[in-house]
Length: 111
Length: 115
Image: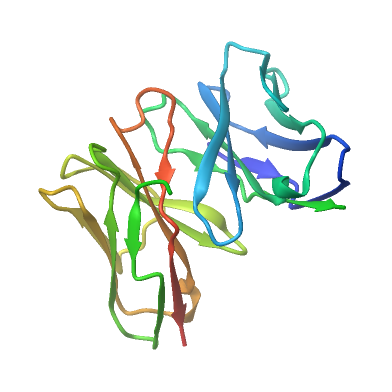
């Protein structure tokens, strides 16, 4: 079945790196995503990774995928106060199926 | 601004009532998704429409229904409301049913409070 799990809270100091972790259970997931939800707003796609990749880097964001352990992580380098938000991990089997989201990790950045 | 418009932004109603939430997708997007976000359940997929037809169904209660009209806007109807239906309801759209990279564009949500 499909189930995506994340820790609910993470607090980091400004300038440090943040690592948000996610585990999923569906080994047939083809696409894995990170979405960001700022206060009072809808979700916005941050980045995604195909299941045949191990790592993807995009500016301050690094996504690591461990298919064997079904573990996905999002690293934010030099975390800023503007990064405070809820981060959702999501999976999809084919990109043509609705995304299954985790409950979200609330990141708080302390100045 | 994602380009997805949801109305109303806030809605307060009583148990047993019926409400309709409306969504206008981004221009050109054929697919509309409805999600329910609550504190305990997180973001739950309800239903997806593609070019007017139902494409996928998730954890949508029988008291809830949706449709997508020829102009591609969508409505989510919630009836016989219960306290537990209080949540933030998101609409999202994508170009082709999410076949490519699954990028969904979310509206700002409709917050429903059932008293």
